[in-house]
Amino acid sequence: MILRYLIEKEFKQLKRNINSFLPRLILMFPCMMMLVMPWAATLEIEDLRIAIIDNDHSPSSQRLVHRIEASRYFQLTETPTTYKEGMAAIEKDEADIILEIPRGFEKEQANGRPASTLVAVNAVNGTKGGLGSSYLSQILSPQSVSTSVRYQFNPHLNYKVYMVPALMTMVLVMLCGFLPALNVVGEKEIGTIEQINVTPVSRFAFTLSKLIPYWLIGFLVLNLCIGLAWLIYGIIPAGSLFTIYLATLVFILVVSGLGLIISNHSTTMQQAMFVMWFCMLIFILMSGLFTPISSMPTWAQCITYANPLRYFMEIMRMVYLKGSTIGDIMPQLCTLGSFAIGLYCWAILSYRKQQ
Image (cartoon, rainbow, N blue to C red):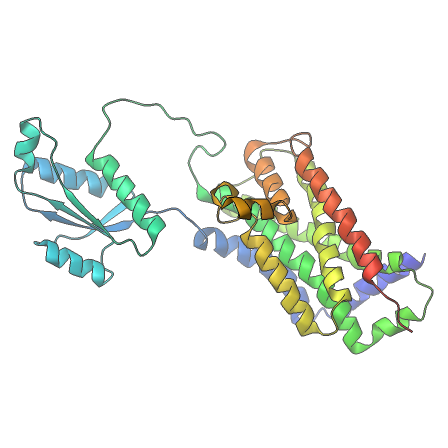
């Protein structure tokens, strides 16, 4: 009965703040994340600006230029007459790659000798430069062996299919982690928590009353993200929604528990926000959101095992892309459950009722 009144108090606080910015942020933040981030946070390298110096002016060199123009990875922006002019285009950030076709290019091909070309790449962005030179090398040196490639789980190599489930995870982390932390510290600052401290409300009931509303908010935000992913990008989970909801139920307990722990040890709103942001930043960067965990150094890969965000991100991508079942995600789900139990117990024990 006491728990019911406490939960009712939380929802009345949300209703009282309905005209403030925070409730609007709960809906605006996931919308902005799903509408903007899949386009902005992409590692797809396309439309590389290339400058081609054709010193041969032969049919063979023209065919090579047309092949490059037909590729979706390159955009012909400059046709300088000398290598020096091409380098000037790179220095002015008007080109990313220079291709110089030497004189006698067609003659070397006709004689059966490998025709040499010069490629200069702007490698300020190492990833962009490396991929660009790799794409160009495939056009310059086509393989004579025909290879049939089948892309599993993401047949069109659409990076958004890989990114959108991870962004849903990020939305849940930011909302269900920050809001409980700010809620408790906010009550400390305005003094309402002192009224609860003088009542016989147990620490368990108080902590649980702070988690349940954000469970509901988390599921509301998750459904909103799933709907936007379907409407805008046509992305639907290959697996069961029940599997996603079950994992989300456990994960929200993890991040909300962490938020409550930080709030219990914080005295001001600024302190809680700074500590929570520090933790979230480390979790997001070490979760495999942008950089695959397998590409990290060995010491960094070991640290990721202590990151609960890693396991939920793996679950979301497995269910969305591979259609994984509860049995497939059981190792990650059990690990998240261990985090949830540990953090929730810590949140209960760290809450001290002060008269």
